[in-house]
Length: 324
Image (tube, rainbow, N blue to C red; front, side, top):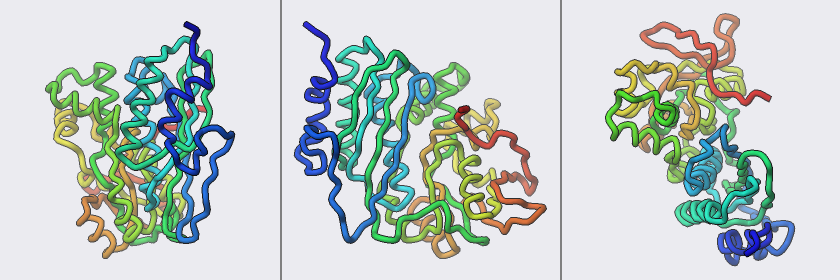
């Protein structure tokens, strides 16, 4: 039997994910049609995952697909929006089995059912290089209200939505660098690396109470640095206030640097700022207050700084950057 081509892959694996949505047009066209909405702004974000860079080449492809969708939805949540559809690019390495491709499609189905999304279209090609998958996600936010990285003010509190450093430690575990931890802790951290936990239910609270927001993909300190510079502020983060899981604290007790957790990537928590009243409301929904926005001066220029016990910790590499 001949190997399936791109059109049979679309028919077998991706048309069922498109369903009967009017945007997708049954995947028979070269475009998706997104109808206008007078009450909402359209939010659009794109993220890609590349084997050997964002995931291991032997990782199960259903988990790769699920992570791809979650890291994209995370961007929409951080803007106070609701995701509802996506376009997909798959660049399959030549020789990748049909069963592997089915696993990838199965992972997408799991996530789109969970989060209420539909496939609108995209492209599927072959490549001699590593597996590369990219998603463009569409979301909605009430017109004129979608959050930005800009909007923070001096005096605002700085908050995060959950544990920091889980995925960084999961990567260490997969590299065999956390051998002293109990198996239960190791498995928890690896799971966080493969499948970050996202919370669409927080979008409304962010929209209502935050002054600026973004998701954390390249490390807490590095992304806080981006947010600070977008507002020409200094963001002061207190290390002892940053939430970490019991498994992470066990790793720190075994010698892992707590600072490394602040600069490791793939957390996909929400980082936001808010005034005093907004911060109190966000804390009630599960956010953690980890610091403050301070006016930039020649002595304290715009950027993010880490403090512990009242002393500033010098950090050379604040987060992940792709060398281009």
